[in-house]
Length: 100
Image (cartoon, rainbow, N blue to C red):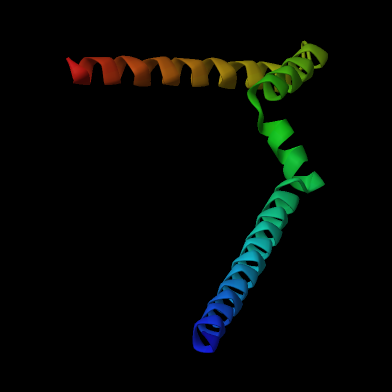
């Protein structure tokens, strides 16, 4: 009976160690994931993501073009914008013709 009880206590002790080790592992994983999240929310990263987002980028470009009316720089930017649209349309047409 004493041997059975000793074996049961040993199993409980091993189970406790296993649970403690698993708990420590999960705490480390959570700490690591918080670090990744914290790094992704740095002001420089947020600023870069906001500036490169399409709505902000198009509004900034519109603001620049509106305030540079009649300026040679505005004409160059407008021409470059038209060329980009033309190049994208040509690329789309080429992909459509290749598929068929």
